[in-house]
Length: 481
Ligand code: ADP
Ligand code: MG
Image (cartoon, rainbow, N blue to C red):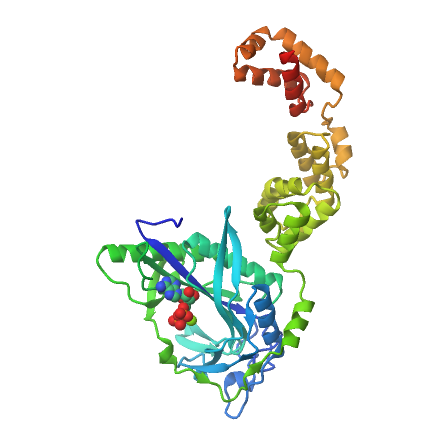
């Protein structure tokens, strides 16, 4: 069931520009490193000097293949570079080299969890292209300058079908995509530096109606802005339609200061760009052997790893997805399980206490104060009944604060061992029953609350060290007898 907003269904499709992590540019040997002095990393090809010719960077193609394999797409054995013609100061050639009719990656899908719900967003394509330069507007000198360091940086543009039905779903998709490209290492994922930029195409419609007219919010480079921009845009479009105005297809920008989107230009159609195959570049041929070699060299993919956790550790799909949200989390989980931590308990602690502490301290699992080995010991002590869950939190605290190194020593020092000696516990329970005749009578008259009161008394008498499950069991038995 799709959630409606004021009776409207939201439709979103994403186009994401991921900067590929090659050392040099897509058609020249200039460096792609970020942050250099303007125009120090622009080769003649990037400057569009006459007579220069582009040479395809194999590393960029290889990364596109890796992406295609990661999302179960088809790798085209034959794809074509095209010229996308437009004029802009940061584009000295007067055209951008991109792929148009035949992209290198076709189809595929991205799967993720939105809360408990599994979602699948279909990809249309992923194509290779070059980035443009940057215009630098230097207000203090009243002039604009052009920096061509970014010109020719390899991009993989990843395009989805309009499959998403809420801003939450779209942000979850973007996070999953970000995870995939950084996991397989084709992109550094640095959003501030523009390595992962999303364009959100947003429209609204009455349920069952044809797709509405979309507006495209450009260059969203943080998950927070992404969410704000789409939420604003959705409200705005519904407001326009409710007021009787039609939506015009447009490209819009999000202004983080005002939290609003505003139209930048009316949207061009593909025909405006006069695409045609680039005569300077031969078709890109990717032999099946190349694809197989890339496949064989790729590390285990997050979705494959998640399936393994479901199969071998009996995790639910949602838990397995959480344990593969990034490499540091996955490695931590695997180490804790390898050390004998019961998988489900490890997950609970990683998603609960551990993640709370990591967030507070702004740390990743890789530099956690409590490593996977002590965590495994800790949860094993819960599993074997040595300590209660609450006592485990105290031990965790001690570990986190660096007090004491061994879980078992901390348990001893703090006297947290649960009472597993049945004789002592029976004695406590007999005493509780003898000294609380009112509660016992009420329980026998069918009052559940009275039973809980007796459990409470027994726990108190044991100074919290009795195992609640055992207290329950013994009390029931004795009261029935
Ligand atoms: P263009 O060629 O103008 O870029 P595409 O057909 O390639 O348009 O679509 C661009 C993106 O817009 C895709 O991600 C697609 O899913 C999305 N999209 C297309 N139509 C709609 C719509 N009506 N509402 C929301 N998103 C849409
Ligand atoms: Mg497009």
